[in-house]
Length: 100
Image (cartoon, rainbow, N blue to C red):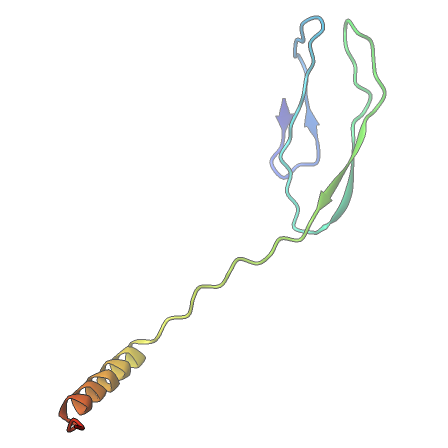
């Protein structure tokens, strides 16, 4: 089987299929544009079994969701500020008189 990268066709030749056998060809395809695309073959020929007419199928490409954005993180200065605020709050709570 031959297929050029980013090409528009696939060719299979020289294969052998035993009696009562079958052949399945799978091709991975990609597209950046959502939509429905028509795929078709030419006439399929065989040395022993004769020829078959062309085959057609529809390829449906759906939109891919954008990857999830990273969870935002605090900048270094915000972490320093948070540390100071928690430190002051802890010190103030420790120094405040207890009620009886």
